Image (cartoon, rainbow, N blue to C red):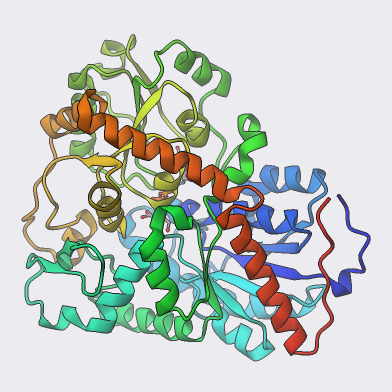
Length: 499
Ligand SMILES: O=c1ccn([C@@H]2O[C@H](COP(=O)(O)OP(=O)(O)O[C@H]3O[C@H](CO)[C@@H](O)[C@H](O)[C@H]3O)[C@@H](O)[C@H]2O)c(=O)[nH]1
C-alpha cells in the first residue's frame, strides 16, 4: 500500500492528543483511519507516552501506513508535578489534573519549532481542545486547526447551549435542577454535576476555560468519535451550532476490527488474552456483566466495596477490572466460580465483543460508551465525573439502551472536592448495584426492547464505518474539505487512492 506519490503533494495531518488514555486511544485510532486514506500522519506526544503506543504504531507502519511520531520532551521543570509524570493517569490524585494541563502549555515552544521542520508541510492540525495554544500556531502558519473533545455531539451541544443561554447565571445553588435550553429532550441537570470546564470555580481555571473558548471560536471544525445514526437530531443541531463543520467519524475503535485479538490499546494488558477468552467461552451467551471504570478509575475505596458486593449479590457472572485491589473479605476467592477479577489494564474491546457479555457496568466515559454500543451490549451507568453524567442521560433517557445505578446524582464526586460542600447526592450502595444488574439482565418486554435497540445501534455503528457508511463518508468529506482549503490557498495537493 506504500505510496509512490511525491510526498510534497500529499496531505499531512498532525494529530496532538491530550496525554490521557481516554483522549490518546481514540486519536491513535483516528491516525490509522487517516493513514488508510493515504494521508501522512504525525502524532505528537512525549517520550513516556510514545512508548505506550509504539507497538500499535509499529503495527500500522508494518502494514504500509505512513504514521510517524513527533516526540517532544515533557516540560517537567517548575511544574510541581512528580518526576516522570507525563500522563494524567500517573498523577497522584485527580486534583492534580489542572496543574498537569498548565504544564502542557509549556509544550508550545518546542511544538512550534518542531512543526516548522515537518515534511511535507502539514495540511492541518487536529488537536485536543485542552491545547488552546495550538490555535495560535495554526493561525500563525495559516493551517486549519480542527479540535477534538473526545466526547459526544450530545454533550457538546448541551455544553454549547448552557454557555450561550447563560442559564448558569440565573441558577443559584449547586443542587437546583435546571433544564438544558434548546434541546429536543428535557435534560435535567444541576450545576454540581457539570464538568469543571463548564463551571470553573477558580480564577486560574476560569482563565484557562476562556482560552479554550476563544480557541474554539477560531477552530476550523470539530471531529467527533461518534456516528450520526446514534446521535441523529443532536448531531444535526450541533452541526448548525458549528456552521456545518462537524465530522462524526466513529466509532473509531472499529478500525481495529481485523487486529483485535492482538491489539494492545493504550497499555499492556495485565491478563493473558487467551486466558480471558477461555473464561468467557465457558459462559452462556449474553450472561456476563463486565465492569470497568475507564483509565482513571474514579471510584473511592468504599464505592469499590459496594460495587464488589453488589456484583456478588446479583448472582450474575462478571468480569471486573479493578485499578487497585481490595482484599475485602476474600472476595475473589469467594467468587472464583462466577467472577474474573482483572487487577490492571483489561483488553476491554476484546472482552466487550465476546458473545458471553450481556451488560457493561461503566462510568460512562465516552470511549467506553462507544465501545459498548459497537458490541451491542447494554449499559449500566454509574457516572463519576467529567461529562459522564450527560452521557448517562443520553444512554438511559434519550436512547433507552441502559439503566442507571441508584437515584439521580445531585453532586458529582469531583465537584465534592471543588466546592467542599456536603454531599447532597445519593451515595450508591451494594443494593443499587444489585438492582441495576438484575434489571438489565432481566428478560421481559422492557428488557427485550432495550436489548433490541442496542443491538440495532451496534449494527448501525459497524455499518457507519464501512465504505458508503456515514462515518466513512464524513471522513471523506473532512479530507476533501482540507484539500479544498489547500487549493484555495494555492497549494498543490494530492491524495493517492487507497489500494
Ligand atoms: O482496563 C482498561 C481500561 C480502559 N481501557 C480503555 O481505555 C479507554 C477509556 O476511555 P473512557 O471510557 O472514555 O474513560 P476515561 O479514561 O475515564 O476517559 C476520559 O476521557 C473521555 C473522553 O474525553 C471522557 O468521556 C471521560 O469522561 C474521561 O474520564 C477506553 O478506550 C477503554 O477501552 C482499556 O482498554 N482497559
